[in-house]
Length: 155
Image 1 (cartoon, rainbow, N blue to C red):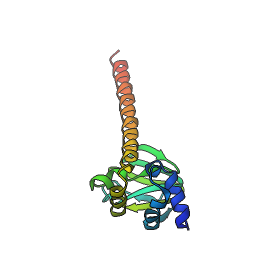
Image 2: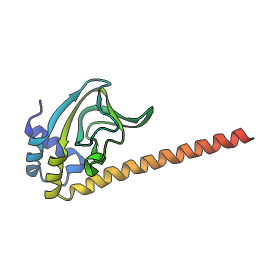
Image 3: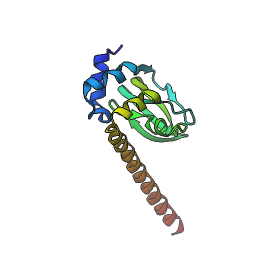
Image 4: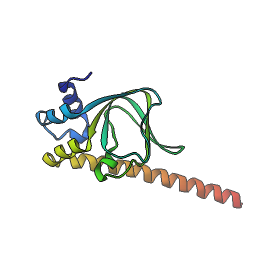
């Protein structure tokens, strides 16, 4: 499906791996697994073991917990990075929006390259901080909405 060279070029385009020389991504590209999903197919569910990181090559995904949609991600974005870092179970579910092609990188392979290239940590931190900021914004919006609704109900 994707040649090793295409995988290396894709990995190099993803913010997590931009600081890693392309020739050093060959091993990771070779070890990555191309996975495909159909529309609405669940990639993983909340509570599943967190054993892999996913990088979207094509398509979009929906991240959700229960009935609450948390985010939508597209090509070049990653998901599954939280559970892969701390061995915890998945904090949310992910499903495909239309057909999806992704690279799946196992925890073992990820930590092997992380050990050789600690600069990848900066990419992971940037992704996590961005997601925390978005979550904070959502919480503030919900609190403001609830405050306004509560004030209206009292008047």
